[in-house]
Length: 303
Image (cartoon, rainbow, N blue to C red; front, side, top):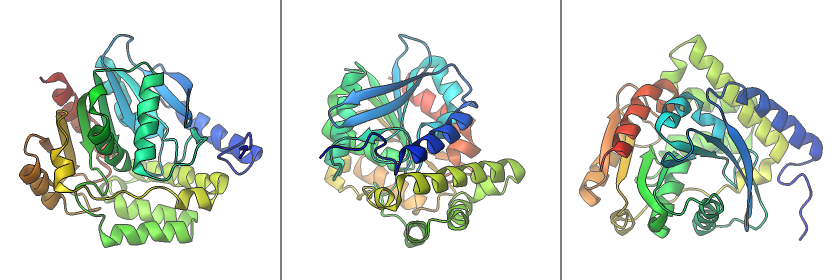
């Protein structure tokens, strides 16, 4: 089947509208950046590349419903010592576009491996993801460990524990009624510490609300509903990860019980390092970017 030139957007007008909005947002990217669209067998992937040539590669996978711009609070620090590759996922919001059907986590992991190959990142890759991106990073490490040197998982969604019923309920509200009111209310619920900072946090939440609301309008509900939900890893799957790994979670996390998640990691695969970010939850990269970056960079610099 031949895909429309504006795929995966609803129309050329929708594509222009969405890209213009994010071009404006991207002006706040704090470091020099090369934007590249990389062709792979499964589609086109948009990548923002920063940091010095020749530095160790650090590939960044966004959370669900977000894209490469979510790394703005962390990218300057991470790019001081690494060549960073901030990815727009091929089957989510952003500028990437799948050309083949994406039906499973195996498809997503295969796309990511093809992308790293196209970027000539054959070995020594540091891979980091947040939320849904961390879930994908963990699944990639299970399937394609040869390229990886280090793995950093920031509050992986649904990998260690199932998402809480409250989180699933708020997600369903957005999918059933994707209006700005429900999207903003979900962000206020899931990122309470960021909201509690007052004007700066609320301004960021309003920006993210507009981004996701525009995505629903420009991509259409069908694509958003078909996003592949995360599944909880078995003990054997968690044990199978041999790549040196860091698990980072905030002590205000509400998408699942963070203490239970830490306890399961410690029991099943104690080789995985664990860091707890105080005073933050799923908003830790926005609320505590220095603490998160410090934890990650310390781990990446280690043996």
